[in-house]
Length: 135
Image 1 (cartoon, rainbow, N blue to C red):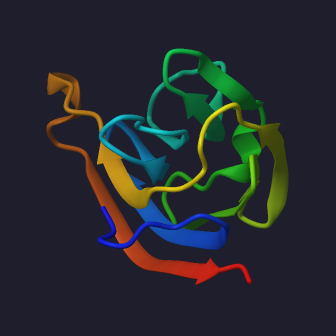
Image 2: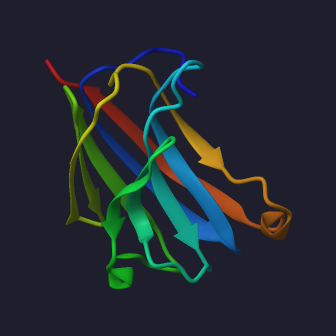
């Protein structure tokens, strides 16, 4: 997690996943509210793919149904614009969509990796994380 709290910002995370992995990028995280998470799926058969947005206690609020946007063996970049009560998401330059939230949009930014036993050989390699606060 970041040490700083962020409200309105642009985010870009370049990563490579190896093995069967369920991970994500936490947006607006706090102890009281874990906030939304942009999902990263690797090697699993899903109805939703990397770039989908999960909201605690509600489930997937934005589904990426295009498996072709994600590169299994290479680097991928998830970009997001978090502003006011909206999250806008792109995967490798292709727009996934926009979601309006009913929750605070101020918090920490971090990476989440699911601790399920079948994922114990999985790796998430992060090449770059860029955060730009919006004025």
